[in-house]
Amino acid sequence: MSATVREVAPGVHLVAHAHVNCYLVEDDDGVTLVDAGLPAVWRPLGEAVRAIGRRPRDLRALVLTHAHFDHVGVVRKIQGIGVPVWAAAAEHHLVAHPFSYAHENPRALYPVRHPAALPILTSMLLAGLPLVRGTTGVRTLQTGGILDVPGRPHVIATPGHTYGHVALHLPDRDVVISGDALVTLDPYTARTGPRIVAGAATADFALSFASLDAIADTGAGTVLPGHGEPWTEGARSAVEHARAAGAA
Figure 1 (cartoon, rainbow, N blue to C red):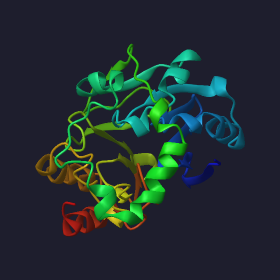
Figure 2: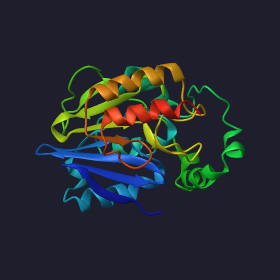
Figure 3: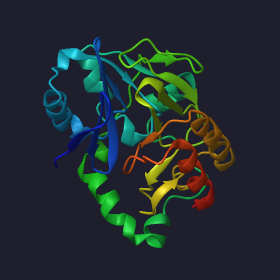
């Protein structure tokens, strides 16, 4: 299964694989990887690093927006090459146990109610979903400040999808990486356009909708989601659409 890599903002590259997005953020100090996909992204990720003119030794940090199974697939391998992994304190248990997540609604009925999502879920299975394993030894992200890794992201608390979810604002690139706090493709329903993820994988709808304010407040021109295409009509517009879409 191949991946695509393309520059979506100055020095920010989207690596899309099995309907899950990772991002490579580069500056003069090296590269930060944001989120870690599913296990089969390992080789395509290496190809993407080389495609942007870098080498694996240039990778300085892996920052997790959250620790659901589809965002930690190669965390152990990243640790194995000596790269520090960062996540909010409230995510550390989930990093160790990526399938033990809270969710508002029962998961089993979603494939029945939303058959259009079956190809998405199948591609995730084929990308190694059953092989995902957790890990420990993760460094703690502090929200409300700047993380000293390549790209110098501003770390914004956006709980709701998970309780420790964060977004990363790169003001000099006019970008906010929203993770799964705001997506443009819901893997559980196949619906597109800005929205929060369905209750099959969202811990708290009320928190999720409240956290959209923090994304809007960045004023970023581009929103880079954990699933789906970048939204280039501004963070405020994305949040308006997400609120209108409601819960699923």
